[in-house]
Image 1 (cartoon, rainbow, N blue to C red):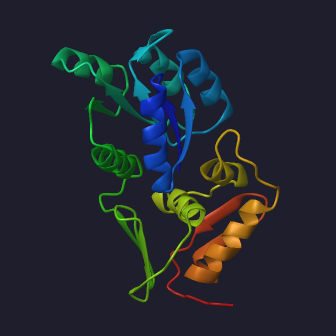
Image 2 (image 1 turned 90 degrees about the horizontal axis):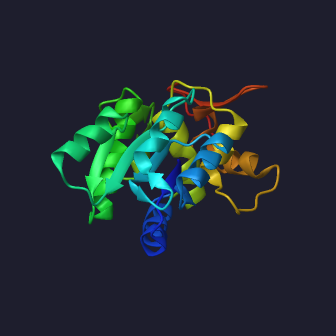
Length: 225
């Protein structure tokens, strides 16, 4: 899951990035509204974490640009403004949630996942694919009841597909979930991670739709080839 963090406090941005990256998220940081607009035009994000007090204006001015996107990301406002009127203004402007600074990163993570579930029309954080169980709330995968160990990148890739299991995910969409700005990746990296996931989860659980992309399969079969 790729996130845009719009925050001009470098120390706070670095600390939050480190926390979210450890939870298998990919995070890009934009310290200004102008840079955030440029990032949104270049990348399809799953979520935007938006500070309101920025050097070049009010963070809420970014929300029309977010709403105009065809596949609109989740928006969680992060701000020191604690008045009820400020919260109402943010939610009315199009934010999905609102968190007041200082906040516990674990609470942000819980809220991010809760909004993520609402947007994916799923009330449960657990996805069942035959003998495979994917628990998005606890970053846990079980196969036949036995935990499966995934690397950070493997989990980031699986999370995107599991959050929207009804969707065909393009190579570009999945690649965005793996790498942020400045990260290096060669052209066949995505296929390498897909192959590793298939070995660990079972080949039948990830479908390849030629010319379109990849999709999780709800088939109860679990063929390890």
